[in-house]
Length: 172
View 1 (cartoon, one colour):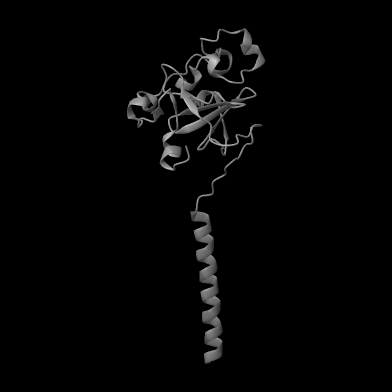
View 2: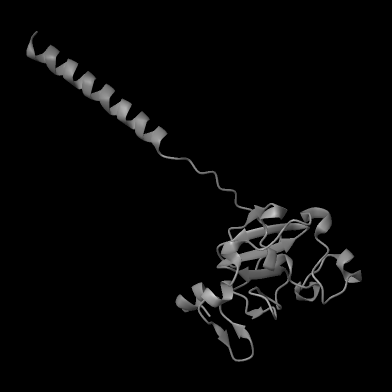
């Protein structure tokens, strides 16, 4: 075989090998589908959070929405749907009712700045009546217990504070 023919064969073999490697690499990389959800409210900045007495949950009383902070995550409740996000402004992901942590579900109605209309007839000092949607089996998971004991202290003066992630970034 002459040299130009051999070079063409080697080039074709290298191309096939590269295409094969690209295909194998593309299939080996896991593809993640992420859903970003807009939940109908925008917060202009990080809201001040206040601890819900007797719980490891914080709420944002001065927001136009039901926003909570618990276990390093932000939780929103709007339109009978729960959302979770890594930041006060999302991105938000819809959470199935059975996946909402028990301490959040135990927050009394009075700590929801925008309670749904039916809740207005409920006792403000009690948690919402979740049983119809959430069943009676929800409870605090082992990894959720004693969360406040493990969390660094970030309360300031009158109970208002800044979540640890934002405090470390100097954002509040």
